[in-house]
Structures are given as structure tokens and as C-alpha cells.
Image (cartoon, rainbow over all chains, first blue to last red; front, top):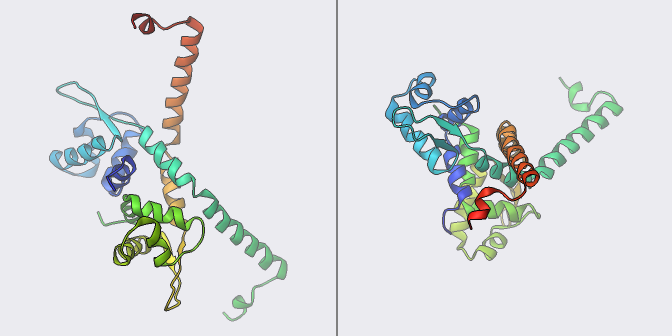
Length: 117
Length: 117
């Protein structure tokens, strides 16, 4: 199977620095220098991460020669949300079951395991 | 930075076959043989994908020696939904802006660009 948009998106998101960069850009556009600062990374290292994010369509960069501000792009993140949203009923079911269990325990009083402690 | 749980989750999801396996498991548990069938893959190839999914906590496997059914686990997917949910306002803003634009266009009649066609 060929690499899809979602493949590229998930792959780009599988890195804590890249997710932190997106977090920073959620507060407003920033230059490479501004992005490098909090991460104590070299400019080339940050640039490499930005290239991955840009290729995945998660950010865009201005065309100004000197500054080229980076901006968050939401469409790819929406696709992730849509994809994972199809599984929502599974974790909601898990919580429903936990909820049910806790209600049962409360109705019955102290659970047996707790008495052994 | 060390690999976090989210790193492993996103990395495991960056593959169309693995996402398709999760899709199949959302309909109910399945054996490796059952999973291999629709993908026209060899059992070792499927097993390899299952190992990645299991290590990422996206599936669990039964302990029955012969069958070992695979099951979807929702917790990691919920973490993805929580993470990406923090960015929701960005795509909702984009749609709001598009909405606003479309309303303006409708109010003004045919947009100028359309007249050039």
C-alpha cells in the first residue's frame, strides 16, 4: 500500500519535539529562531523537524525571505480527529463499564478485596 | 527526549495495514488467520504488524495457545483523541471563516472571479 496522507500525519506526530512545536504554534506564528529557543536545539535540528511538519501539511511557512514565520495548519489534525473519532464508542464503553462497576461496588458497600488489606 | 506512549501510538498508526487491522478489530476479536485473509498477507507479515500494535497498547491478545484472539484496546486511541482535541478550535475557526466567506459571497451575489471564467 502506498503512503497516504494519514501515514505522513501520524509519522510526523510520532515525535515529542514536533508535537511541542505544534503546541507552541497553537499560541501564534513563530520564526525558526523563536521555535529553537525553548527546546535548546540548534537551528538545523529545528529546521529538520519543521520540514517534516511542513511535508505532512501540519504547518505552513511564510514566503518572506528573512523571517519565514511558521503557522499551524488545522486540516491534517482534523483528519486525525475524524479518524480516531470512529473509535469513540470503544473508550466510552470502557468508561461506562467502569462506571457501572463503581456503582455496583458503592451499592454493595466495601469491595471484598479492600478487606484483605 | 525519550519515546513516550504517544510516540509509540502515533508511530504504530502511521501504517495503512495497521489502521485497517484496527478497523477490522472494531467489529470484534479475530485470530491472526482471520486478520491475514482480507489483506492477502502472509501470516508472518500480519504477525509483525500485530506485534507493533500490541507493543503500542492498541491491541491485546488472548492467552489461549492455539487461537490467541486479538482485541482492540481503546485507551491509547482515547489519548490520541484527547491530544488532537486540544487543537479543535483551529479547524472549527477555519470552517467558521469559510462559512463567513460563503455567506458574504451569497449576500453580494456572484463573486468577481467567477465573472472572468
